[in-house]
Length: 506
Image 1 (cartoon, rainbow, N blue to C red):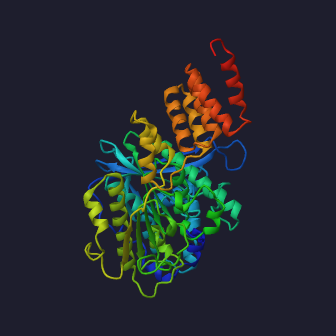
Image 2: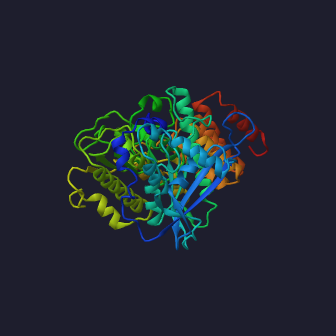
């Protein structure tokens, strides 16, 4: 959660709220049964403590199933939370620790009967159910600050019932402890650690026979939204991102310390849902200078919740209580609002990963047209003004035709005004192609380089090198000389020109 740890919520939740607790999951499920698996695995490429122990990544998986498996209660989720860093804990130890974690409620006056109802409440998922046949889009759920993987189990179960494989892990910092502690270097490193956890889960998803990782999205709540954005900025396999009041809107100082995470370069379509305390357009934007406000090269769907505080965007808080003081809403209204967040999240994922026209129409419609109760939310769609483009996308287009490279470059640059290819980009691109023996492709890139950056001596010497390698001596001599006219100190051009012209026949 944004600057609020679970233990604080447990200690300070109101007695009145506890009486209301253990509601059913608010949204109507889809047609699939929901299976559930737990994989206690570690990422051997990283360590939390700098020693030999690998970083634990407790992995929870919700998936479409054909029939129910072993019934689960909410207590089964709670017991996972007390063993997320230590998989060796026995069932008895897990139960004892769960008892201890809930003891704060007795201090606040919660009865044993209330706690028993929390723990015994059935959940939609069932353990080790038979997976449905086929392959389904993948959603990585990213938990909020220092929270368990199941904090939004309602959402995870709901998406699985509608045909998604949902994979989640707990929110751990760089050292396995709290995600944030108020120190910028630590918080940034911890955010990158959670983003790396996302990458680890994506890799694991590829091993699941029922998971289609070509259709991949990330859903993050609070600080999980921040980490999700870091992952999406680096990994273009992520086709869509959903931010449930993601922290990237509220922590500009941290983002300024991450030069690789730039709003103007962000191209992943995003659904951002804001809480009632921080209004978002169309009425007004409480954070007009935020990362979200500066995204221009990605399609945005912006939703403002009118009845939910930040903590209310967590199923765990709606179940067990939170610090939020509710004087103008009932629990039923908050549950209804949560259900609408689930519906809009599903529609966004269906639009982006399943190319569903009905979902697109739902998102394009007004809240009134979608029969959302008045006073629940606002919604606005903002399409990308343009895409900045990227080298990988352009390279794919270049490889798809044998046309003059400039005939590919010019229209691409018009469509993507922010697209630029620098000397270093061209140089690395050619080196990568040559390392795999793609001389013909490297030659086309070198030709393009001299057209895009005709005042670059390095461009002309690289083009000449390609010609030199293919025994095109006359062309190589011409272009080495062009390189030297632009930079008399070009060592490569000097040496090769001298060698070629000294050969017999020149």
